[in-house]
Length: 325
Length: 79
Image 1: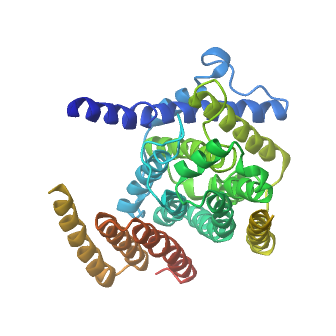
Image 2: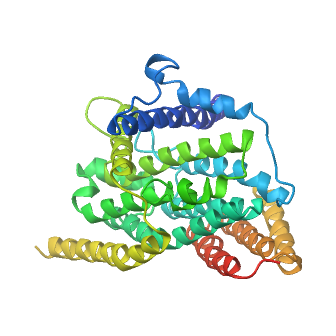
């Protein structure tokens, strides 16, 4: 019996809804994102590999994995090698905390919301480390921009996460999902401003247009990834897809009720809601042009931070009003 | 038993990273060692059944403080 439950846990962590499932899902979301973005630009996007091009992300990954891996001789070797591994491992670790199939995730403890904020900071810092360790001027510039961007978007994002946490009176993501499920409301109804701020912050976290400043290809080649090639670049690309799953899963769990819904199983609602979130992000990506780094950071501190604090104040006032009335 | 072994490993790694923080020559390596030390210390708090302390330890010391230190390092001149 003990062996059986241990095997079941291992299966949950490694296959479903753990590592293998999440990687497949991330490649699928990359395909959704690329197809939608291409259609908005009057292109077709990937269409040849597999039905409707659905295997193209996997083909890209395998191609990159088999290519030659070149390291600059001046690079800081240990950090240069550690960054691609860490940047894949950390989002997978964080995804184990997010509820995917039901109201409870594989790992849940009081305070895992804070843990996720920490992991997102570290992932952004890894971009800086990778750029700094490659000792290329373009990479260093991209890495410095990534670190500076983190200083801008992180504070409003963390404050906006606190809205659902205040409503559910818990810092655990599973309990926030549980609260929404048992009360039958989504926290986005009371936190519309917080949700908008989280979308903007995630655009910056994912280094998407209009916040693709760290890898602005018209200015600094590929930003902090310039010196990466072969296997390491494949891991970094995979990490971006995993981050897309992580951020959409987190937004869905915190604001859109998580993987819960009528009749159908949780996993169906999870995929539907996260695809809607991915489409929002792709649409915004097609709509805007890139900001300058100073515009981005000052805009975050001038508008997003006050707005997120106003959101919390409104929430507290409405809660107090509700308890009075 | 497993908890005790883990705790000893974490305590030893905390000490090693603390020494490395002082001894490393490169500023960035110093900052990374400090972050590793804070994470190990968070692990110790976690094993001592203080999850909130552990979580805030890694958020504030391994997250926010390290971001600020890295921002300071990146503004200094590189040798």
